[in-house]
Image (cartoon, rainbow, N blue to C red; front, side):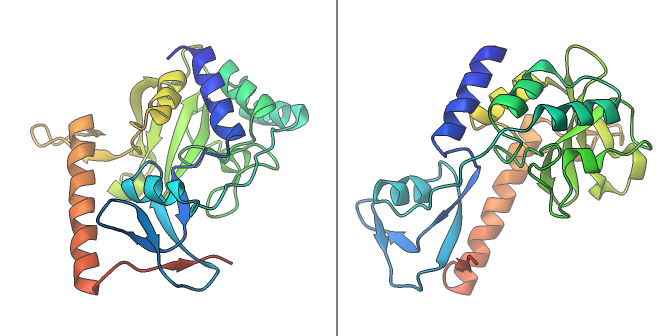
Length: 242
């Protein structure tokens, strides 16, 4: 996808309130025909489901998916302040998204500038900036478990970097992902974006970013583990919203 196509597609998702990778659905089950049959539950009980999953689509078809709140763009002052603190202009696509569509909050946990979306410690992308980290890298998304995606604002191609400290490599937890910001967002729109993950190469022993095949293998392992846990627990657990 070209940059303008990516921008328009994100704008459409946000306008349609269909911009998150996870959605809350009212409890139920898939019947024999694959339709979502609601089950009695407290009014505030919801299940967290992956966008585009069979459960999500079936629940959406019967109006059992909670609408997402509208998102607001960032102010020009907030974007300018972020660029001054970073010491580089933001990539034009990211800058335009902030100013015209949303101050973060969409996709895989895209962080905002001042007043925008935060990580689990209530930090915006600006709050996450650290002079000890590689210069020019801007933390554009938070995935959970201390994992972040960064965009390199020091060069025009705006290449993406991952940060995965779970390997125990400390400051060496940064690694290039080999794709641009435009491609990164395009992959999200196509449902093919994976969180950054460091792995140790089985042949060389060197640490590097995971390949698509390694991501797929891990996703399969996680899905199988979740299914075993679900069967052992005798069914899925519901989660309540405030």
